[in-house]
Amino acid sequence: MPARSYLFVPGDRPERFDKAVAAGADAVIVDLEDAVGAADKASARQHLLAWLHAERHAQPVYVRINAAGSAWFDADLALCAHPGVAGIVLPKAEQVADLKSVAAAGARRILPLVESALGVWNAFDLCLAPQVERLVFGTIDFAADLDLRESRESLLHARSQLVLAARVAGIAAPVDGVTVAVDDPDLVRSDTLHARGLGFGAKLCIHPKQVGAVNAAFLPTPEELAWAGRVRAAFRQAGGAAVAVDGKMVDRPVLLLAERLLVESTRRGAIET
Image (cartoon, rainbow, N blue to C red; front, side):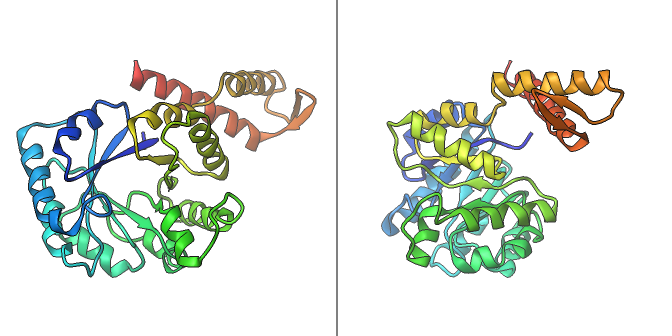
């Protein structure tokens, strides 16, 4: 199943790599870009290579390389084909040509990190580029690019554009950006539920403390599962015709939603048992 949570770990902090893998996130992203200063880029890359050579990991390990056109991009491309790298997160994703360069370097999966107006504008084309698994929304950089005051309302249109582009392209639902509050699990959960309600399928995490709240928010709630069970039972009793459930008329599209919730709960439970 597609990951729900992606946990960043700085590439220049190799002592944290194993801790990140053990934190419960569905995937880990070793960050060679924003988390690492210019003077430490090369050493961070070497720390990552040494760790990858030392052992294999149960969780997929992605790498956020430096942006196309940066001084470190070409050297970072050497990581794309490494057998321990599940995929590449490409920051400042705006042009299909840059994604093609990453794919040609051997990346098995690519997560374009959309952080600008041009990236959102080109989102559908990015979805169709080779090896693209899903989009990632870089909310902070996007707000800065448009001089927005970051809020749910100001980012609503861009979030919806990414969800629509991914759906039309037939790839996995996009990954929402970070919540900067590390010690506020209620806010992390609220932000994740907001993203889920808009059609996002995962969220970035910047601290292990956030992982549990994110994972839980992408699971169907007990109330949702109980509702889905009532919908399925009512449809069976009605022989597939439209029927009232909890005082509301439901038809086949609603049944499909209920079935997805039930299947998702079963599959997640089997994976996590």
